[in-house]
Image (tube, rainbow, N blue to C red; front, side, top):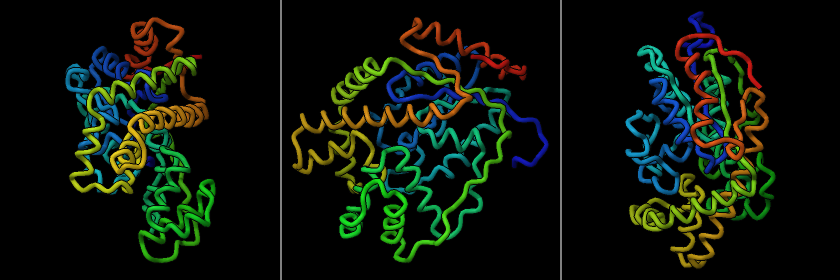
Length: 326
C-alpha cells in the first residue's frame, strides 16, 4: 500500500529512546496489556549470532509476546534501512489485518523516522544503496566508526580525510566498494507522511543515572559471555571491518582478541562508546516534537510508565482518536 492510496491510516505505537532505559521491557508490558506485538527497530538486532552485545531479549523476557524483525540476516549480509522498512511494512499490514496493534520498539532513530515519516527509498539508483547504508551506519555509530570503515578499505584516503567530513568519507568508501566514481547528485528523501496513525513515547532519565545503567549493562553482558560471542563470530570468518562487527561491544572486543588492547581497556572503551552513543540517540530523538517523554527517574517503574502509555495504546488498538498530550 502506498501513501497515495485512500485506505484509512492504521495505528502504530512507537516506544523509543536511548539504550539502557527499559524500552524493551515497557514494550512487552504494553503489548501484553492490549494484545499487541512488538517490532524491533534496532539496526544491530537484525543480525544472527549477535545476541548478547545487541541486548536481544531472551524468550523468557519476551513473556510470550511475538517479536518481529530479529535475526534477519547473517553479519556479512548487507541490510539497509530500506530493507528494514519494507519488512516492517509487511509485518504491520499483517497485524492490522489481524486486528493487533503494532508496537515498534527501538533506539535506531533512522528506522523510526523512515517508518513514521514514510521516507521513500524507491528513487535510489546506481550506488545510492551503498551511500544510504553508510549514512545509516554513521547515524547509528558516529563519524569515527565510519572513518574506521574507510581506513580498513582505503588507508590513503582515510589519512587525507577528517572523520567529520562525512560526505567525502562516504564517497571514498563507495569508490572502494564499487570500484567507480560516485554519482554527482546526492539522494534526496521524499517525505510522504500520513500512512500510519502514529503515537510515539520516549523514555529518558537523569544522564548520570543513565550512564551508570550503561556501565552496569556492559558488565552484565560480559558476565553473560559477550567475549565468547565475539570470538565465535570471528572464528566463523566474519571480518572485523564488516559494518555489523563495528557495532559497539564487538569492535572493542575484536581488537582485544587481536592483541591490540587488554580486556580491561576494551571493556572501558565499550562503556565510553556506549555513553557517547546514548548522547547521539538523545540528540536525534529530541528533534522529534511528536514524542511524549517519560522520565523514568520521576515515576514508579514500570507500573507508572505502563499507566501513562496504556490509554494511548488502547485508543490506537480500538481505532479511537488519541488526544494531544503534554
